[in-house]
Amino acid sequence: MIPRRAGKFRASLIVVLLLLLACIVPVLLNCSQLYQRVYDDRRFPALSRYALEPTPEVALVGSSMISRVYEGYFQTRLRNVAIGGGSPITGLAIIASYPALPRIIVVETNILSRPLDPALVEMFGSNDATPFRWFRPYRVAISYIYYWLKYKSESDNVARLPRQPPSSYDIKSSLDETEVEYGSHGLDQQMAANTEALRGLVAKLESRGCRIYFVELPYPGNLNDSHFAQTARSLAHKAFPDREKWPEIDYHVPELRWVDASHMDERSAIIVAREIDGFLGRLTQPN
Image (cartoon, rainbow, N blue to C red):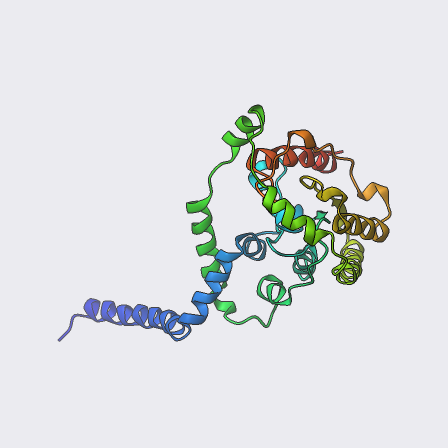
């Protein structure tokens, strides 16, 4: 006859195994889809963290021009949800899908030629119909572990690099190619349509209490005077004419360097972050 204590232990063990099996079976049945979900989180870690972590007080949106200005370069606590190869419209649409919003959003307006990416909004926006909602706690855990493994403090570079002289890069071929692209009028209609979409999203977010500001980052070489840059500048200022929404920021352009026609080097990104930080600090300091 099996002792009563041993019988209770065996029953408890069976219950635990059944519970583990109940957790494991759905994972095994959906392994490829769940892998894709985690893979997408890793491809867009800033968007994933925005979806999985508490709503930040300050958010940045835009293209890769500002996505390279990393969060660790700022003293202000913020979330940079700018999208490399993407658009500020997509970032704002993701933010707007959530019931809780940042108090302040800064929009980089350099690249207005790219439309909304509905796949990213579906992937990282608030969506009650999204599949595998039961997997969310695991995504949160994976995200924290990934961030802990990958994150390195930027404090040493922030303190050291601005004191060093600027580096030199040979980006002539990149500039030449981009000057040809930016001289074209082929994107004018798309930029105008995207600006209207941006205006609609800004109005929607402001009606919900967000304070939204706009910045145009410096361009390298002659790109600042290109048709593309002038068109983006004109459209953005026409859509958002309130000058208080455009902070006057001294980017110390003679000190900046670019590694290609769009992206600043780390030292330059830190300088730019420091100047934006000064503006954000004035907005977020207690009255």
